[in-house]
Image (cartoon, rainbow, N blue to C red; front, side, top):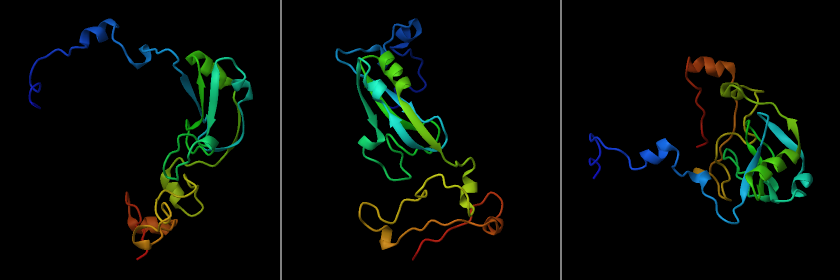
Length: 183
């Protein structure tokens, strides 16, 4: 079965609709009662949301609701949440808005007022390993320790630590210093 098409000259069945523009894509399908969603994305590489006001957006006709990070389950770092009040990269979703049409959702999105407190951010991940370096994630980038109420593998806790310039020099070019897990 796998070799049925390999090495054979064939024309895909959907080539004519794709070339002529008659093909149907996801956005082409409309259903009665369909709701459209738009996401409010963070315009900064790292920030904390200090205030959020969607009153004007919610007052618009055709807007069904606004979903914020406070209303969805949060994921522990280093996982990425669906919505967050602590975006750690440009474009992370802050809120979602649902409306009757895509244009109403886009217009309502513009009416949401958000205030951000800019935070230090990391451009070079290696810089975050040095003492005093900015951490990309508040809780570190290693999962371990207390996971779902249980201790990490073997009951050990994983500790965050920083490396010094000496540690990098000993490791050599293009190598990372090695850490040690508790035994």
